[in-house]
Image (cartoon, rainbow, N blue to C red):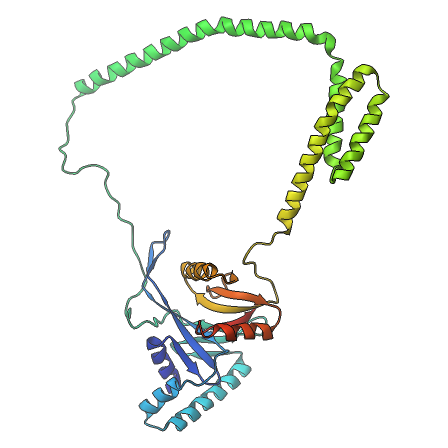
Length: 361
């Protein structure tokens, strides 16, 4: 562990942003205590660490820390930082990764982009130093009163209390049998009357042909119809067909025409509604190849939701990005097709939000 890595680690514990000139900025975000509802794991409050390669301007914080501890001039401390950055870049280009002790690890992802993963074993918050994660077992509470004396019952008492229950069950069974005995003849009479009614109506069974035909026309209308013009043509064709039938069949077909129009119109409305649903795009959807201005990155999803709600209430176009491979939830403002537009928007937002950066998906 070099002295510069040591100074960076110490500064991160006491500052929200530590800039390494020519390399980038380490940004710390406070997190509250958390209890997992299933595993019952308690996570102590702390701070998560992120990295922004866009912030490279020397603010003098790291150089002043080196100058004070090494007893050298500010310029010599700046030269030491420049040598460290050169070594960092050459090692990263050669081995594709670089580990900073007690800070985190830099590496290239599958797309060839530089990524930073903090060391989760280190608590970057000095306020909760020494607090580790632990798991506890839920407390099981008794539902009965321990102070209430136990009442001892004899076998005679139990027998005397069970007998009324048996008598009550026998009474319920007898009552149900009586009701069933009264209702059974009524059910038989209703069934017989229905059968006689059905037998008397057998002579009008020919009307079922027209009913099936009308149902067939309805089904065809639902399948074909899509626009109001198609509905009008279908109604005209049906009216022309009914004039060539017998008077009884023509009357049956004419009565079905209004139903067909209603089905056509309802089907069209459903189709339009479905089309609208397909065209709608879910808000906050991430588009591949788009640049986003990241306002915050959180290990805890609830913190990301709070920032998302706050920015949405202010009228900004906010996007909550999916969790990345490192388990961070990012909240972005705007989506841009080019890096220039994203950088321009980031410049406009920097006076209000510190530590923001641009990321491409």
